[in-house]
Length: 107
Image: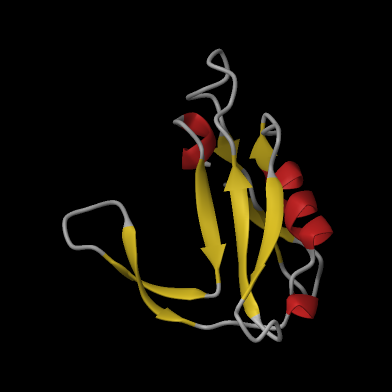
C-alpha cells in the first residue's frame, strides 16, 4: 500500500502499463475503456479494507466516462494519510486451495 505510506496517489483502472526500466513505477501504454457497470466501488473498497492494515482512511473509487458516455476509466484514489500512520501500512493476502479449502500460505 505504497500510496498510503507516502503522500497518497491514484490507481487508474482501464490502462495497460509497462514497467519503466530502472524504476519502481509504470507508464500508461494503452487505454482500455470499459462500461461503468463493470466497476463495483463497494467491492474495491471491501478488498482494500480487508487486505490493507491498518485500514487507510478516505479511499474513494470514481468513474470517469469517455465523451460518448458509454465507457470510461475508473480510479482508486488514496488520499494522504495521517502523518503518524505513514510507513505503517502493509497489504495482506491468504492463499487458499480452491479444491480443498486448505490455507496454502499468507503474505
